[in-house]
Length: 213
Image 1 (cartoon, rainbow, N blue to C red):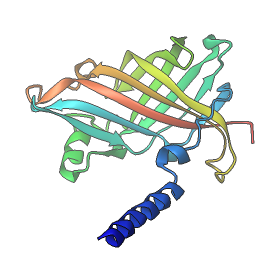
Image 2: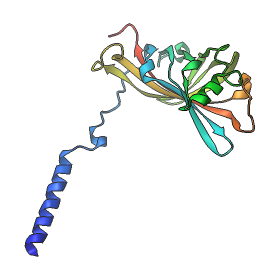
Image 3: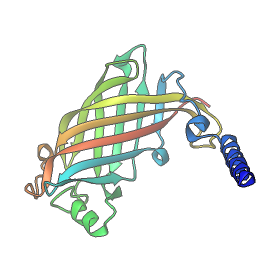
Image 4: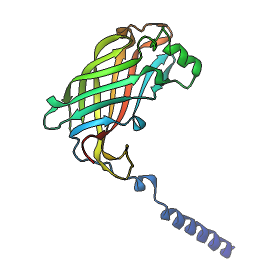
């Protein structure tokens, strides 16, 4: 019995020792880069995403995304008046994980992609609210209607990432931006009883600084 107990304890110790040889995800994760965000950047569409959530049937939240996004942004921490953002999202890049729903949403009752192929946002000013947060004011054009909106912006990181090959590598920066709009403000009001009017927008941006290696 004693030998059996010693063998069991020994096996347990070996197992724990083996586990200690493998670093946890938290230990292995590299630190976020926090170099200067200053500069003009081109959005990397392969590492950026726009998505939205909206109430469905008064019981749940539905999620959709756009798989293409393009644009540029300029950030100057010393002079926020110079900050500017321009983003274009092709409406036909919509994906809701259900082909029939995609067709309905791209049709005339909703986005009407044939007549209004792009969603566009052009900033008017950026207002810092903290070291890495701010409010981005601007105008969004959707469904042929332009309306002012405000994004809450959080800076994630910035710095040289030369391990990635071109066109992804270089001096990068990243942001998360969120806003809430009323779809009725943009002339999209179909199925009001089933689909909520308030739509929460999420944009995750990674950009490559231009004019630098």
